[in-house]
Length: 229
Length: 214
Image (cartoon, chains in turn orange, blue):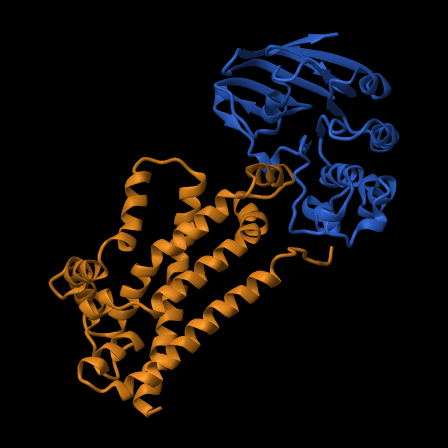
C-alpha cells in the first residue's frame, strides 16, 4: 500500500472514531430525554433526528453545505467568531459523519434507556441518591450494552459514509479524502489497482469495529461489579 | 413515631384516594384488597408520586405540604422502601446493593453494615451477583439495603407475597428480629392476616382509597 493510501486509511479511522465520540455528549442526553420524559415538540425532534437516516445522504450533504458555508447560518457565525472554516476541511468530514450516524446511535441508546425498569431508579432515589447519582450509578451502567451497540453502529456508519461527505467536504487528497471517496475516485479514473488495498483496508476496519463491539458486549453481559465498601 | 397524613386527595382511575388522619407507627400493618391504593399511599409517603393535595409529616419533619408548595426531594426523605418487586440492582453484587445507601460514618451503631448482614443472615452472600440468589435471599438483601440507610420510617410493600408459605414462615422471624433489634417504625403492607397478626401491633385497612382502623 502506498503512503497516500495509508494516510487515507488512517484519516478514515480516526475521523470515524472522533465522530462517534462527538455524538455522545448530544446523543446520550437526547436519547434519555426521548426515553424518559414527555415534552412539547418531542415528536418533531424525533423526526428531525431521524431525517438523515431516510433522506438521500446527498440531500443531507446539501443541507449541511448550505448551513456550514461561509454564508450559511452556522458556518458564517463560526467564521466571524473563531475564524473556522468547515466546507472542504476535515471539520466538514467530522460533521457529515456525525450527523449521518447520529440517528443510529440515538435510536439504539433510547431503546437501552427504555428497557430499564423505572422502579430501579426510583428505589435508588429512596436510598439517598441524587438524580445525577442515579443516572451515573444505575441508569448508565444498565444501559451500557445498548450504548456500546449504538456506538458500534455509529462508527460503522461513519466508516462507509459517502454522499454527505463528498457534498460538504469534497474529495481532497490528503485532506478530506476517506476510503469510500478514494475507492470511488480510483474506479472512476480507471485506476482499480489503487482501489484494491483500500477495499481490503475497509474490510479490516469494519471487521475490527464489529468484532471489538461484540467482544465488549459479551464481556459486559454479566454485569457484576466488585467494589470496596 | 407519629405520621400525619392530612388532606390527602389523589384522583385515581377507579376512585379517589382520600386520607385525613394521624397515625402512631410502631410496627403497623396495612391490609386491604389489591387495587385499594396501598402502594400508591407508600409512593406518596416516599415522594415517588405526588398528589394535588397532601400534607405528610413524619415525626417532626414535614415531607410534603402542597398548600405551602413544599416537597422534600425523594433522596432526602429518609424513608426506607422495600417495593413488592424488590428492585435489586441487577448489575451490582450483594455487597454493592447493600452498601448503595450506606454511610459508615453516620450510621447508628445498631445499623452497622456487618451487624445488619449478620442479623439477616446474608453475610455469606456478599460477593454473589443478585441474579443467583433465591427468593428469600433477595428479600433479605432488599430489606438490608433499606435498613442500612438508617431511615426514619420503613415501608414494606408485601415483602413476603411472592414467596411460598414455608419460606414465608422462615422469613417472619427475620422481620420480627428487624422490628425488635433496630426499633424502626415500620409500615407493613400485606393481605395475609396471619402475617399481620404475627408481626404487627396494629392493623389498618384500606379500601377504595380510604383508610380505616381495623
